[in-house]
Length: 399
Image (cartoon, rainbow, N blue to C red; front, side, top):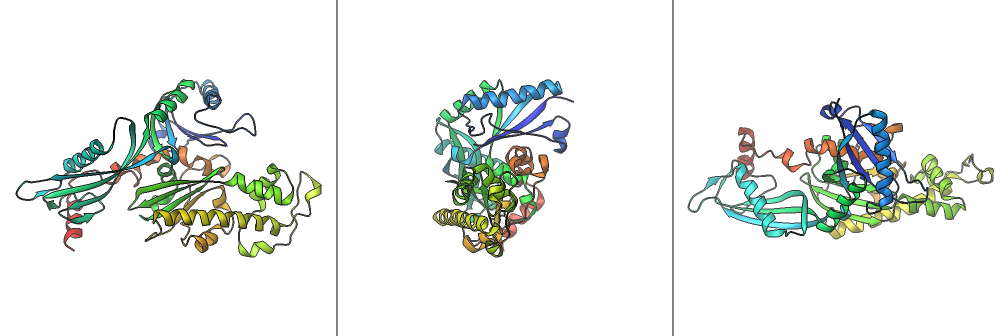
């Protein structure tokens, strides 16, 4: 059967692990999901904390003893706030006197030239996205393969991590007695795990409502343009609800999951909530819960809109992909449309996680789908000179 390959995503509240053996890796079916929580309920995970590495490593060793097979390869889901986006630029003359057809080797040389001019030894590139090509002044957003021209200019976005973070990450895996085989940026893994690529949308926003923060990723022409991380998430909503109702945070979280809504019609819901843990809180009305959540997520989405306006990312957008626990709240798509001005795109996870809730495993499972998704530049444009590619580019140039 062979060894297992694992995808690992570390967040503040849990570590999500998705594993495939050598057979299931070919079809990406029958994956094994593992949700690792801190031993201390109030504790937090951190990739720079040795206790996190020991906890994850112990669970992996326990899994290996049960299956009698080793987890030999691990892919790491890289948080967007740990990367830096660096713009690169290169230009080359394809022919000194006449014109020449743009070929795959020219695109590769242009990207490599931009890398050499823009990055120094301190940075380790993780992803590269050519954002714009200019062939004799005409703009292309896809490689202009097959088009004749003389001068090719290329703008490239590099997503890099510094050497210090890379060394600390290697140390983290060394504590687990493992080796990191590769890194994939979290937004790219997440959109690959949900069926966003089947919507045929090229311009959209990805919003991840996490427990401690809200992550935003901007996609244009299926390329990752920029990422931002805003503080505040689901834990803060639990805290607001806990203070407003005078209950514990654990109970507030249960009420949010079971009865929470941000729908306008639910803000005046007079029905009482039956609290099984403590009879003292049986008179809590659903409308009171919903008003607290509505106020909190209204502020969250306003912060998201301000961030997108700062990036000038709202123009020509086709919608927003919302993931995370808050994305399941009733009425969130309407609130998103009112405040941000974008339609929520209907997406579902490709693989079902444990208990039918795959949201926590989008990053760890999406890393396996990323090589074949449209958001991987190498996969979308395979640098081939097929006849259809040449006809398409020539049509765009002249018509």
